[in-house]
Image (tube, rainbow, N blue to C red; front, side):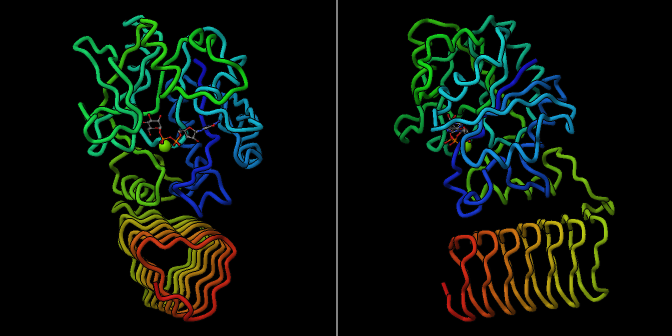
Length: 371
Ligand code: GDD
Ligand code: MG
């Protein structure tokens, strides 16, 4: 079966991480998130996939090429300008054929049973089937109320609370009959959620919702990006981790040096070539990227430290994200969902708190920021 992935967005809510890496290519447990999504599709025989790129397309091209290293056939099509969710799929329609296809938002971590979704779509004779998931706050998503037969009644994209009539939202995985794209104008910015789907409903096309209680997370914000790491490390969703596990969910890569006096607590992933210095403490729900260096007496908890970052002596990192190659001097504090981009140099004793975001390659003198 063929699939198409929407991976062209700017990922603005995840800046500054997405200044240098498109959201679907951000590492999740030390491998590009999109690879995890593609291998999930492949399990269900969806191995012929079009990537609809737009923002930083070369990063996808360099990593995936034609997909052969994943045993898949990947076609990559980059937009000159953002075409919106539906316009982007219209733009790649020539690669999709005329049989039903899977369309996925490129920022969803899920263990959805894609086989069951496709079966449901065929049984219902649907033109479009939309996977639905329950969430606590539907106002950040697309609300999709159903009738008793599972037919979609309405689309309410990013509703206000007074419009909330169900907790089921569009989970961002669809089965489409490609003929529904025939009515979409080519080369124009066009939305599934606000244009094509409501139009198809008005035309009386059979559109069904497929409610699922599978694991589901939209990775679009720093909080959700950390939560995805926590859930994988805790084993709440089954994502393969490349490194060896000691059995208590402590995963350690190759060529790692951990000082005898350092203490580590699972669930934890330590990438290849990581060094952890004397009396450092690396706490639960943390992911250290390849080549990360943790200085003596540093303390890290509930955080993601990306490849090649250097955490100075006595630093404390709590529920925050540190970008690739960023270097922190001694006694730096980073806490409360703060995000430091790639290749920052921050001198000693700076304090980053309350969700502060620092742009890539910023140089900060010692003791300058106490936020
Ligand atoms: N190629 C391309 N071109 N891709 C795009 C474009 C575009 O112009 N705009 C967005 N995308 C991609 C993004 O990269 C992302 O993978 C996906 O489309 C969805 O975009 P988001 O910006 O993440 O949308 P959202 O999270 O606010 O809302 C969507 O997803 C929700 C579920 O997470 C909607 O589909 C909601 O209805 C849904 O509930
Ligand atoms: Mg999203």
